[in-house]
Each structure stands twice: as C-alpha cells, then as structure tokens.
Length: 394
Image (cartoon, rainbow, N blue to C red; front, side, top):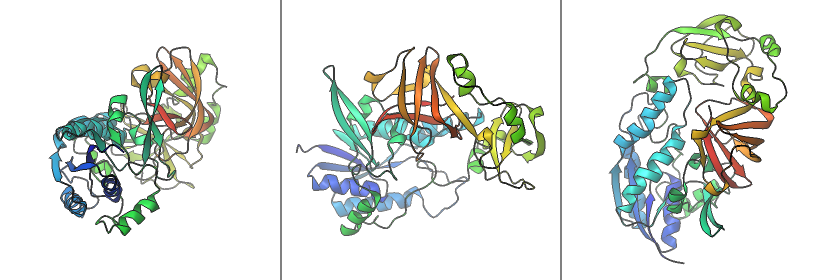
C-alpha cells in the first residue's frame, strides 16, 4: 500500500482517535489538526465540555500515537458560513441542518485548505461512511457509500460534498461498527475510549436552541392555533398526477381562520415542523405537535396527536438551484424520472420514492406519506448503498 501524508481531524472523540490509530498502523505520515470553530457558550446546556477540554484530550491522543499536533482557529469562517446561515434560515421560517453545512463549508473546505498547508494528500475524519471509485466514460468518479454500521451511518451529513472534496477525503472507520471502534480504543488504551459522543449543533454543542437563536432573533409574542383532524379531512389531497405535483409537494397553507387560538408563543421562528417540546400548552388529551409556522403573521399551527394528518405529506420539492449531485454523471434532466431510496433527516430509514425532474426543480413523490417533512432540511437520495445527490427542501 502506498504511504501518504494525511492530516487527521482530531476532535477529542473516540471516532477520530481510532481513525488516526488505523492510519498510523498502515504506516502513513500523519499530522493531527484540531479545529476551533466556536468560542461562545450562549445557550449552552452544559459548561463542562468546552473546546479547550476537547483540544486537550485530542492532544493526548496525538501524543499517545506519536503524531504532530496543531490547532487551527476557524471560528470566524464558521460563524460566517454556518451560524449566520442558521440564523437567516430560522428567521425565514425554515429549519437548517448545520451539520451538513459544517461538513460542506468547514471540514471539507476551509479545514481542507488548512490541511493542504501541511502538504497533505488527504484529510481523514471519523465519519461512519465509506468511499469507493468507479470509472464512467473514461472519467474517475468518487463514490460516497453508507457506513457499515447502519445505526451510525453518517453519509447523510456528507450529502453536499462534491467530487473534488471527496477525492481528498478518507473515512478509516467506515467499515467498522461503533462497538468495534470502542473496543479498538480500549485495546489501545486511547484517552477517548470511554468518552461519550458529542451531541447538539456541530462544534457548538448541546444548546437550548431558542436561547441560542435569541442572540440575533428577538422574541415576539404570537398566537398558537390548533388545527383539528376534521378540518384536515376536508382538505384531503387527490391522487398524484403531473397536473398537481406542486399541490402535493408543498404543505397545505394554513390560515388563521382554519383553527382556534389555544395559547401564545414567543416567536414562530423558534419552532419547527414536528416539534413537541417547548409549546407549554396544556388541556389536550394527546400531545400537541407543530404542523407549520407562519413567520410573517408570527403564528404557530399545531395539531393534537402524533398521527395528526397535518404531520404527513406525500411529497416534497427541491428547487433546481438547490439540487446537488454527488454523482454529477447521474444528474437528471428535465422530463426524466427515476426511483431512489430517499432520506429526509439523519437516521431516518430510507424510503422509496420517485424523483420527477422539471425545469423549476425536482418533485419527490413517496410510496408512503412521510412524517415531518421540513423546509430547510436536506433530502438525500441513494441507489443501494451509494449516496447520489441531495437538495434543500423548499
């Protein structure tokens, strides 16, 4: 096997630690690089775990493996390219996925640029996914494959990567399960062997989202309106045909007069479709769930029960400019249609559906209605184990 110069993104977690150990065993020339992407603790639910602690543990791992260790501060780029985007999306009434953006904009862009300063040929991370290659029409194509551990597969988080980014990426633990990774860490006595996995927003940590968002988005009292099941029954959609793709793939536009006011909230932009916690409204037999928000009128629409028909939709739409093909050679043209396995959120089981490509974008129609389709999130589509493309849900 050819020996390469590789920069390993050490985060202070067990996954990146084992990724580094595996590459070290293969004899590669390694450099460990720790990213500082966030300094603030506003809205943090715990102050026990800071980037300084993560960096200290990452340095301990590098020392254990005898790898040069460096720290790079990317916080200004992270704020501009990830956090500011988050604020703008929430303000517009959409729900972004910062982890997908962090991988596209930071880990495999800004961080990659830093890695290349060390004359690295590749950047390795602790993601649970795999990479392969194929040749199409004489052109080398890099493939992004799901991780072997179906419970930890993180290919979805990398759904916005392009061919250039994939060409430089390595995923050493993609063929391992989480228990196998833990066992390796224990056997090698790595400092991260028993460390818990990080949670929350990528590099920000676990936060109280409304408190975090209130750094830029001001609280504003508005009405919570309950939509009844009987009202939704009157609005049942017709069977999918080409004439009503748009009607099917967009949520029903609730109006203030469609339901009854049952309480108040502190800002529609703090809520997302499918949300249950944070409404703080009693009096219902079953829990209330957010069906939709109207940030212009500052209204949150809710429904009673987790099977409320307002939580389910048969399709979604991705605008043409928001379609991204990890496999550009498989890009669909207007007028084409194809069946894929589709995922609309991390760890959601793949769902069979058909993508209908039109000039304005792609209409996704599922075999079974999907719960909690959310504007601003990413839809990713697969053929067997390979992630083919992704797009922002309108």
